[in-house]
Length: 158
Image (tube, rainbow, N blue to C red):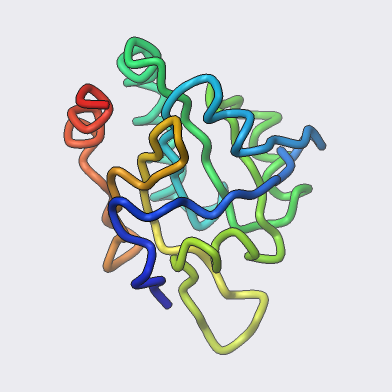
């Protein structure tokens, strides 16, 4: 279920979510520091999402050089993400969206027949400091993800 109204130039929906460790993170506070890459993953249990987290960690310095912050939104329960991140720490802020509220706002919810199986499509949004969408990628399949060089080029132009 894609949100067709959320395109480049649109204001990004604002939200507050918690990390698996219970820390509340406000999107508006993050934007005060600079642009944000908002990355949606299915969950830390997903092998493709784990590879994406690892790849983001590999290029972290390039994002920092552009003063960009990476927020990863996982569609899972906090305890599940906590268990994974305790063993495999991430240099990025990982947020959990157990009720899929933010995932719906951004139009990246992939619906299945059971509510427990409703998960995010892999997706990437670059938000500028004013909170506008400057880049949008929503994967057609869970194995796809946005090109990080393309995202870095967008950030370089902000």
